Figure 1: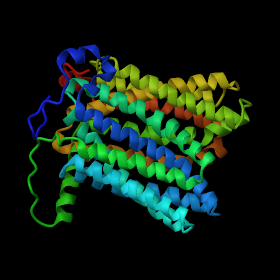
Figure 2: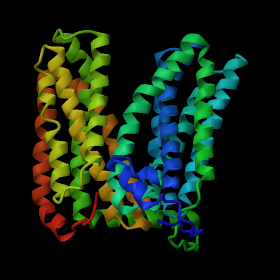
Figure 3: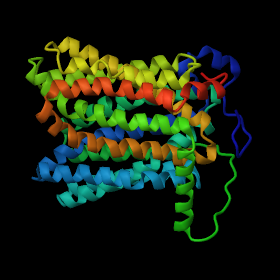
Figure 4: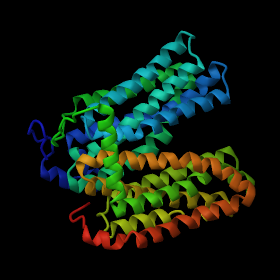
Length: 436
């Protein structure tokens, strides 16, 4: 593989490729090593922020209301810019977008560290920085997803998405929060923000030294920039709505997040407590095993060839992976609940690896940023609604019934999507030959 702008081969020799296990083959490309490092550092920084901001809020004498506003600001910033981020990713240098996003996050976290050290930090400052971080992520993720196919050989895309599936729970849910907790236990919370700024600055540095890989032509849009951006976004929606496999998959995804996201995020700790399976430590262990399942599922899928029936396998793995959730509403033993969460994490994360690869293989490169952002936006929009509805639903029907619904509905919708969108015919008509 050669760079699009320099013609210099940054891929290791073919014998080295064969020595690497399939899940690690993307690392033979120098640009991917830098991009994956930038992603890992960004995920670690996000995980550190989630812990550091809580203790910083406490340190300045604020409480749950202020913390809620901070979390809301981050979510609003992310949702508000996700679609625009996709448009920009299809019009500008994706590498430069990632660099600027990481630099913005470094500056935001650095400003918190400085203000905390000088005893000038206020809840308003944290709310503003949280919004900046959300906005930065709204540009970062579509650009990253669209950039991967330009730096990774096509046969290694499945493995690259598997690596992302491993990095996300490992760094954002485990290592990042753990590092922040360790720093806060020894120093003041402000030191954790110094570390957050440092990791995002390192991520920006990795992106800055990565060669520009894109070869696609960029034609200047004439006329009003806002009208041009709206036109690009309209074209993205038009492509989505006229592509049956995208409509079917995203319809399923909305259902999955709506019926399964809230129960896991909101009801799981109450299920563990009320059914006598344990307390906070049991809940933490259950979440850890859920994340471990995601890591194993991502690694396993990345080590295998892409299934011939990739659409059917993906949706059935997502839907079938929700069946173990029925156990969470009925079991009274922690081990059984952990096993169910592990299996759910493994199957759904494995399906996610296929999904990321599918987007990168079948969506036109010039449209990939917008479609990635639409996918991102759909998931973000359904998650808050799910968490808002799950509490009243549990009060009305009980936790067991809600988890049973979360187990059954996704698989039912998956089967309907496969049939109504004619995905079995689509995957035969569009084989991804040689995909790994």
